[in-house]
Image (cartoon, rainbow, N blue to C red):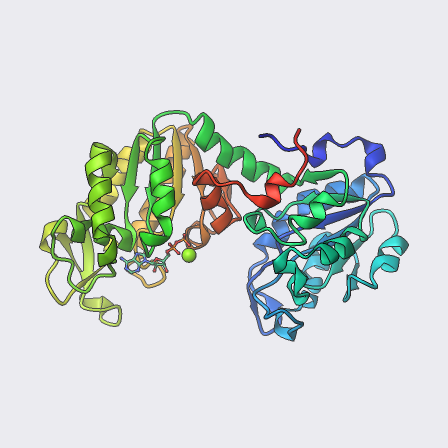
Length: 393
Ligand code: ADP
Ligand code: MG
């Protein structure tokens, strides 16, 4: 279902109106400062467009996981400085949405206000109708640009969308729905998915949903070890989920040639003893050692396959990429995506750690999803409450 976009609203729906925008400012912080402003920058197209059209912009976001009350370390005051720098404009801070209505009315055309962390009010995560009404009073129209929070039915993502009309998708949300939706609806073929990361358990629904749609599914990361274990191979001290062996066996049986496992691995006795790393084939992992990355042969194999693809979706690193040299496999897959993209393939990256792994390469990829959990749930075929609540186009 296509959702109505901010782009579809006529100028008179914006000029002088208070646009209540749910953004995703859930940024990493250290000592009260933003350490990565990607999410702030990602919201700029929507905010800038609204300001140019003469709207008064009121921003809503959560930050971190406060326990149902105000906690200074989760205050959105910490993003004010960086947001003002990016906007080149001053920001009004609304510490309490209840008493903030007058502030929103005083905003000049093109003015911007930021409301304190939505999760400081206990009703947010319960999707409380009263809190949704409080938020709704802050705007004359509602724009949801927080794709990363759309899989949660919260007062600021779902409840409020039913109370303010029009309720439309912002540009970031629109982009996410377009690119992730196209993967499911009409991918150019061959369509290859690369899945990695720590655990098969967290990704099983994605594997199940993608298998019938893809031409090949390349598996890396610790997830591959669970498949090795299920095949009866020695996995040493690798991160495996033995309670998923049956499931992995089932997948191997039903998906036949589509599931591509690593040929070999880079192993070490432990992460602390990374210096002793060496490469082995998948059937030669010794007891007492653990798999930390895909090996060079697998990198070449995966690269060759990816260069034939017309659509690629990637989620989850190929190894413990935080600890070199076990970042090599993840880097190789990232490079292969860029290479395939240069040949015309659509390349989409989703997930938390995978997105970190392609930092700085965003402009060489078709789409890097800002929503980890939300992008996976969308690919699993689930309805995202924050999306469903928006008007249909
Ligand atoms: P994403 O956030 O992109 O969805 P995950 O959270 O599923 O990815 O997995 C990321 C984590 O998986 C990383 O912290 C990485 O160190 C870990 N990982 C990848 N391969 C292995 C491995 N072979 N052994 C242990 N951990 C691994
Ligand atoms: Mg993760």
